[in-house]
Image (cartoon, rainbow, N blue to C red; front, side, top):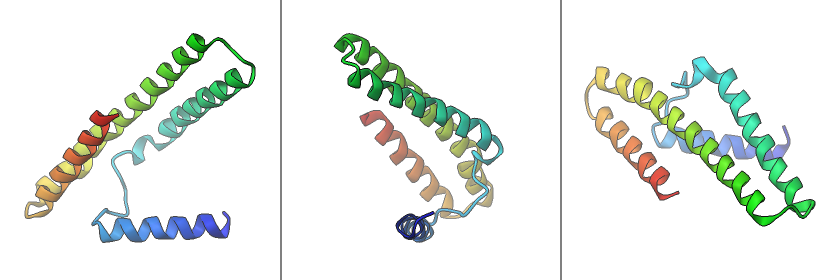
Amino acid sequence: MTTIDATTAETREAEAAEAGAPDGPHGYSKDKDSHLKRLRRIEGQIRGLQRMVDEDVYCIDILTQVSASTKALQSFALQLLEEHLRHCVAHAAQEGGPEIDAKVQEATAAIARLLRT
């Protein structure tokens, strides 16, 4: 990891701690390997898009692949959201107190961001 990457990671960790995000384990942790495999497949789709543009492939064919890549990312996001609800929000509900309201608000904001895309 480069110094810039390490600094960026440290900044993200500090921001997460300030926002009250737990260090882990996260809801997706038990399926981390399959998530990473899925993300690598999506990354391959994006590289394929770059190759298609480089090779001057027909516009509609590229758009079809953009749509497939977008759907793959949306599907991944929905699965991650479900795991967040089942793990993080459910845990906050069991603990009670004001944390549940924060987790519900956090999930609602994430859903709103997904709907805007």
